[in-house]
Amino acid sequence: MFFTAFFKVISTVTLPSKIRKRMHFVSSIDDIYRVLPKDELLVEHGGQLDFDVEKWVEESCCQAERDELAKKGRVKSLLLQCGKIRKFGKKEA
Image (cartoon, rainbow, N blue to C red; front, side, top):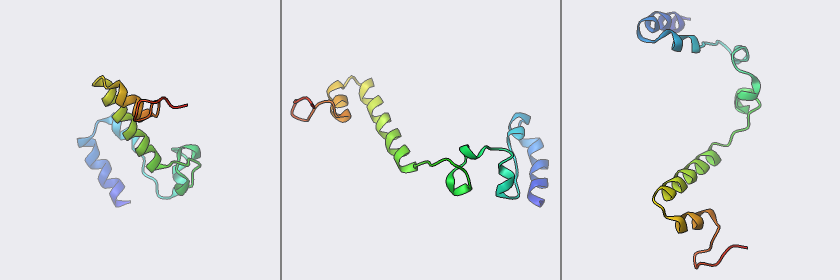
């Protein structure tokens, strides 16, 4: 309770109203369902969203590497990384 009151006083000076309107304080996990639907909350927080962080990081990193290779015009390396050709120039079936 103290933190919420303290934050409201400080935020009126430091944060724009647009940001303050987006911030919500809840006292229990049940209160958060009024702000966010269950399908957007992670399973461990009582929601229905099953999200694999490790898979997302791996996909994001691989995509960034592919984008970088494409920018440099390294098409052969890009195709090799995507599994379209093998290392010795033979096409994948």
